[in-house]
Image 1 (cartoon, chains in turn orange, cyan):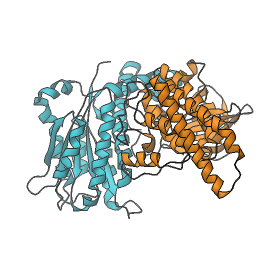
Image 2 (spheres, helix red, strand yellow; image 1 turned 135 degrees about the vertical axis):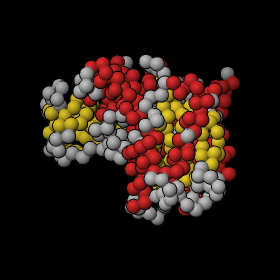
Image 3 (cartoon, chains in turn brown, red; image 1 turned 180 degrees about the vertical axis):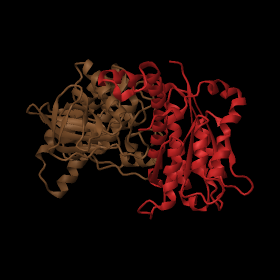
Image 4 (tube, helix red, strand yellow; image 1 turned 90 degrees about the vertical axis):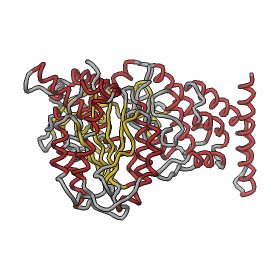
Length: 308
Length: 249
């Protein structure tokens, strides 16, 4: 393996790859994504759609396939895509390359949905995701590279699926892969040793994107995060949950879920009122105020909960 | 498998050497002592393609069985972490492949194994790269043209420490700058395991003219030998995972 080689592998649509060990044939349909660790293609095999990940670095393929296998062993968690095959194959250029094949998760990317979904719907999806993260954490693993780009709203299952398991890390080890803006180390709000709070921090950043996409300078400025949060309008009801998660105050995913659910309850109480407002400018402001108000109610609820 | 140590030099520079020894030859020599040489070339914001001078960056790393990347200052943080991690993985991969060959015969390497077995080998390698001790000499080019990039270098090194602190294996590092007026390299920070100290050495950076990369590499590599007399490092010196094992294909 040479240092300067980029791990992506370009394959033309229509290419066929035959697995050398397991003799299955995959028909390349279309490129799904490219990253620092390889390329993912939509493929067809025995009439079914699947996703094939291929990389010039064979250890990427082996490592990710290992993780998918582990996730699968805990059957209740269908957080990630299921693993179908791991093999080597010759490319049209006669190079031998490793690849793995997984379930094709069909749905919409959360990057585009996060601003469009109602706050209640987004909150419910994230709440569900928190339960599943908790299961992953209980198995001794952290997702690591948790970000909107790695989340797909599964049309069939109506919930968030996590794709790209390259960052999954055993608790207690150094996070294997991360993205600056979702990384607490980048914001100097914690280290990169894998523990549940690492994922919760990233999930809080995901929620913040519902306000507007988070932009940052080359070096993370903590103040910027807090300013963003305190001046936010749309995500006000989740402000406290987000803040606690950013500060690493939630011991585990279930604690964060509990507070998020509470905020959601308060939010849905105020919903019928919102529904009646018509779209005039003045009323839009009052709608906004209502959301702020419900945020305060949610916060008070939270305080009462903590005090109890 | 017993715990070993990996030794690396991380050179951060923005141009080609213009004085003294050939850095590629020096790098080849350094790798023969069990130390890999990684190089990060820093581009100016207005440079749209790789300048010829930076080609040397890849050649030094190749000769030093290390990893190289040429990036804009803004991307330094991510790159440093990646280069360090990748270089360590490569060294360990080379070592494991060597072990496999000695067990299974000459033609065997990890890729000759069926995918199922490969998965198990991969886990051993991951365990190793998480727990192995890492000794790193950081060598920063502080010639005049680096001036504008220094704050980015500082940020990135500070960030690198967060990643290396998170590993289970022990981590020791030392920082040198080059060039200086009187010496080829100047020690900025002696061997330490305290990642926070790197932020404090940076105000000391004085920025000077010429770029004697080869000589600087040679001098900085001596840090690994100095360390052998050092109590803290003595244990680590025994079980060095030699990067020259790495079988490049």
